[in-house]
Image 1 (tube, one colour):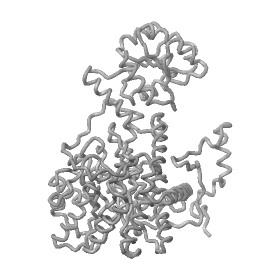
Image 2 (tube, rainbow, N blue to C red):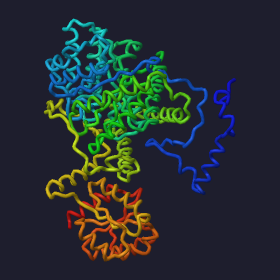
Image 3 (cartoon, rainbow, N blue to C red):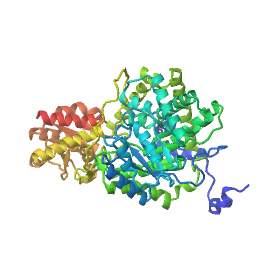
Image 4 (cartoon, rainbow, N blue to C red):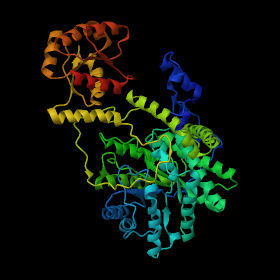
Length: 623
């Protein structure tokens, strides 16, 4: 057996290190603090240890064919069908291997989308060779469900062989009901309509898959990885049962269902989630008496991680998400353009979305290795733990009567809401960082360009007879963006943003760290920091504050400098007209004395930044 030192002879010059050696070094750095301080937790409560040994006796998770690239899918969502067609042709000519036709009313439309008419379908697909291996994915909702039929009719009237067309039809009324929070029909009424459409498409010769189990619904609403997986399993099994119940052999029905998952910038969790879904679905197939075959999984980079502020950071988030989904075996990936949260993306944003995938495939060769995470202790552990958590929740949904009954009972929604609230609390406290929005804001960023287009307005779909709690999509940065919008409005109306005067005390060595923190803290809410030199004289500090024109003041220095200078400085600022004075740092036992001297609030890492910034605006509005 070859040892590590045989392959790496230089390693023989170093003593062999094991887990205990590493723990001794870590304990020395922790200096008595508990080791659990280094253990992270996911929103499903799964522990993430700081170090894992290599996983033994594991095999790669079957996914894409060996060394096969994933489909590079590009969104086609322009409401003008002619312009949408031009976008599609440009994408295909420049490296895309698939198109996601996003119709108005679909779960992933995000305010735009194609018109679901036969005329619009014909215009969009003009000059696109559907039988040339191009992957086509349809994103439709109940209001736009006829688009799937129009696409099928276009193929037939064009004389194309349906079996040669690689089309995923995306029928998914369960996801639509979850997002809307209502349905005009019961599941017993919905299922025959869905299976009728599937059988009709299959009879025409289309290979499918036809029904989509869309986990993006849960992810977009703020849910956890296990919740997303359980929702996909519950929807997938509901469609599988319905298709079999309509007389389709289970072996044939097996290939008629596929999944969609969201991929976000958490690399390891995203990889574990995609791998877990394959294992979980194989477990369902085995329970059905089927020989497991790799489930087709389409990935979208996550909507909820997009920011309207500093949108170019979205490129980095999408790159990491694509990297993770690609390595985890996604069959098709759609990168949401970095300006999608601002409006309809322009050619530059679309090009970047397309080239993000091309770079990772063609230059980084990510598809050359099948399941490179196999054997990696951390990812294997996360995959296993996600499987267990998701399966337990899936069983809970099944015991409640299936996914539709669970929605009616509010079972899945309650769990997602609890996770969303926990996530929002961590965003507010900046424990979960959104670069450019909640941290490191750029108040002088230039406005990104988007296209001008009028969205398609569809009529309501039936009477909402069966109502339940909705799972609407959200973006994590929205609360901070609302404050930035207030700042922009002030700049437009008054010619200046709200300002905070950084009352720096002592030398740069004393105040630089906390002044930098305070600048970023207030900037996240659109409050511009007015910096200053270090002050020793409270009178000079007060004069500088008056000259700054700021509405707020924030004392910045070291704890040692605060002990001598914070109280007289706060008093001088208050006398100079500062009605709202903050101190950067935790007050500890000095809080009462500082407040008595005029300090009205404290800003520090781990505090509720969002609540503090919202309160600052209320104070300024009352002043």
